[in-house]
Amino acid sequence: METSIQNPVTLTAGAITEIRKLMAAEGFDKSQSLRVGVKGGGCSGMTYVLGFDQVTANDNHFEIDGIGCVMDKAHEMYLYGMEVDWQDGLNNRGFTFKNPNAHNTCGCGTSFSV
Figure 1 (cartoon, rainbow, N blue to C red):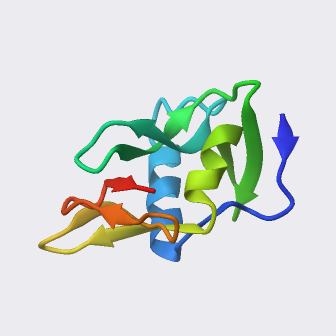
Figure 2: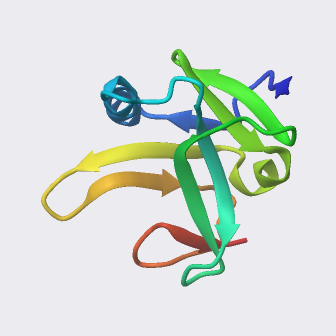
């Protein structure tokens, strides 16, 4: 497992608060880290991945405000500089992604192309 010097992504204060709530839930597996990544699919070609997972040999490890995070080394080129936020409004509730590498983004905000 490698540790990045500069974090490839940032989390807003709202995202950090919501992630900490999830981590404080009863039964949370403390051996897991927050995985930030992408997978194929979605309206625009790639979909964001944000969830808790075990560390793998292909992961870079980084920490944001005490939250252990991992990202597959191959995903960094798609996500470097991205900001993850938490929205809690009437029209939009959930994690949002501001990705400077995305050329096209779908209406739902969870799918993009590069």
